[in-house]
Length: 67
Image (cartoon, rainbow, N blue to C red):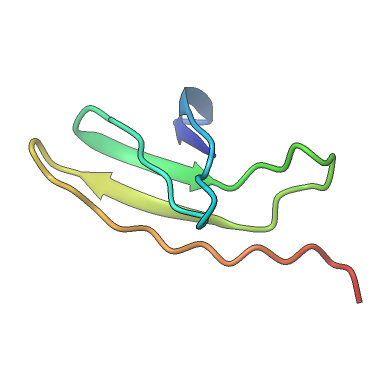
């Protein structure tokens, strides 16, 4: 998982075994992107605005493209 601000990666983390993740971010607007260590291009991202002291839930659906 990556948090981008104006296209620059400002924070990264991994999901846990249930797919959940946490990022500690300063107030601002970010694009949250699901990244893949297996080499596939990400298909899931979401723009979020964070206020001071706020917790925000982001749900991303990742499509591997495998059919």
